[in-house]
Image (cartoon, rainbow, N blue to C red; front, side, top):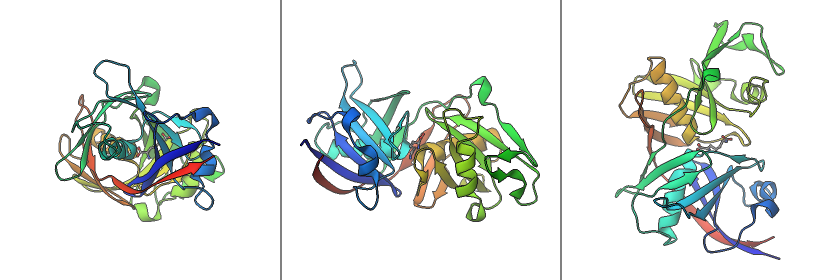
Length: 282
Ligand SMILES: N[C@@H](CCC[C@H](N)C(=O)O)C(=O)O
C-alpha cells in the first residue's frame, strides 16, 4: 500500500490537504480524493492541492487543484497563499516570490515579511458570453423560484472568470441571503454547463464588502479567494466598489484585501496557516 506525506492547511477556514509531488510519487488517477475529503472518516478538506515540479523556464512550480467532490479545477486563491507558505516551510524554495503554473495561467504569490501572502491573480476575463445576465421575476432556477429575493423582482449576476468561473450577485444582506438553496440551484443551472461558483456580495461601502460563496464541488465554504477577487471586480465594474484601492472583503472565516482596476491584474492579500502534517496509507 502506498504511503503519502501531506499537510493540512487553511486560508480563512477554506481548508486544504497539500501534497508535495516533487519529492514523492503521487498518482492523482488512483487517489481516493472524495474519501480523503470526508470530514468524518477522512482528512477533511474543501480542496486538495498538489505541488509539482516545473520543467518550464522561469516557472518555479506547477499547482493542481481538486475540489472535495474529486473534480479538477483551474484556480484557487486561498490555496495559492497556502501554496507559497507550504513550499517555503518545506524548504522547496528560498524565494520570497514564486512563479506558479496553474491549469489556467501563471500566478505569482509572494510571502511578505509579516507572514501574510500577496498574490498576483492575473487578469479577470469577460468572454462575450459572460456578460452579466438577468434572472427575471418568476424564472425558475432549478427547484427555486426566483421571486424570493427581498423586494427585488430581478437580480443581475456578474459573471467573472478568475481562471475559474464565478457568478456574483449583489444582495442587501449576506446574513439572510439564500446561499445554500440558490447556490446549489444556480450552480447546476443550464446556463453554466461547467457549473459555477456563486457569490453573494453585500456592499458596506466602497472599500468594504461582505461575501458568502457557494463553491462548485464543495458547497458553502468559510472563504473563497477567487470568489473575493470576482466580487471586487464585479463591484468595480458596477461602480459600487473603489477602483485601484484595497477593498476589505469580509467572509465567514475572516478578511481578505483585494484590489483591481480595469485592465490590471487582480491583487489579493491575506493569511495562510499550516494546521498539522501527517502521513497516510491508501
Ligand atoms: N476555494 C477556492 C476556489 C476553489 C475552486 C472552486 N471551488 C471551483 O470549482 O472553481 C478559492 O479560494 O479560490
